[in-house]
Image (cartoon, rainbow, N blue to C red; front, side):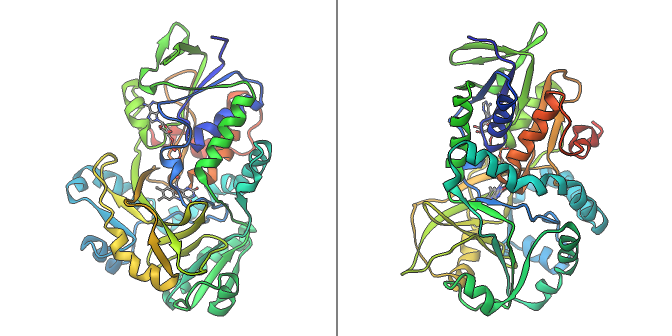
Length: 415
Ligand SMILES: Cc1cc2nc3c(=O)[nH]c(=O)nc-3n(C[C@H](O)[C@H](O)[C@H](O)COP(=O)(O)OP(=O)(O)OC[C@H]3O[C@@H](n4cnc5c(N)ncnc54)[C@H](O)[C@@H]3O)c2cc1C
């Protein structure tokens, strides 16, 4: 096999974007996955490029909200009782990172990445000949009651400080944008700078095709076979062993099982989530993704139909699916938008890879020269894939990074 400079493990949106940015800088890249590109977590998201993100989702501070979750009544969150002892340390760290001062710090530390999110996708989509997948209509967040909308004050003030455009709308003005929505809400915020895609799988596949067109190899192999061979990293692939001076771990929620044997144990948790596609009843349609903020779900228009995505579930990554949140939220969702019949017999499930401080890890692997990490993108892997790819490729090639990578370093966990 020809010389390879960098092996990228994981062909989700993050690994594929890293590979593409390395190849654009002249490196010979091998993108290795046990499946075809984009078929795991990056397949099933809501397709939103959330450059508007200010605060990450937080551990609930309202005791009533917490009680509803504990009693398994909440549409926005579910959990497996038997998993609680295992996830408890992570949840405590997540709660600590959800204090107001910490959320503010996260918002500031993450801003440079979010600020580049849409522009970096636009560049890659254009180069991949896939600009048709992009929709620049923003997204609409709706609020049924006054308290939820009033609680937004701090977020909107910070958005203004960051220069993120938005419009606060009353019901009628929001329904001018989305006439199929029923007037069951009082307020909405239209985040105009947000973009979305009509098919997240097609985006990753288009980036992988572009990578191959740049001369990279896109192949099947098991990341667990990664080991050192002399001064190189070696991986066993279907086409034989592959060596390179540099390797990148972009395995999303699957990273820990490959990193642990190398002595790298970072506090990655998962927030599982589900989706299912529906036809809009009659002529009902949406022009952009819509989020029902108090109930906690998103309706995203996709090539396949209206994709209804759920909030979070705390359960072991590989435990059997328990899509109970659909039953809890469907009455509200159908009251907001006339969903027709589901288009599949069963729902899809994926696992958002999340660090408790809601920041990804992008940078050098601790204690392993030539090994780099790009994972833990939580609710924003689609959003941040290309910006991550650019940042990591700049670090790996010794170029000046477009932003300070320190907040995303693995060193912050002190392990
Ligand atoms: C319901 C839901 C809605 C979401 N909505 C949004 C949204 O609107 N916007 C947004 O930005 N984000 C959203 N997300 C989050 C986003 O989907 C993830 O953050 C993102 O897909 C993670 O991408 P990744 O490349 O890190 O991981 P993955 O897509 O999981 O890629 C990891 C790859 O590693 C491969 N792999 C694993 N183990 C091995 C192995 N041993 N050997 C070889 N290969 C291996 C897998 O096959 C996979 O292809 C959502 C997530 C969910 C669940």
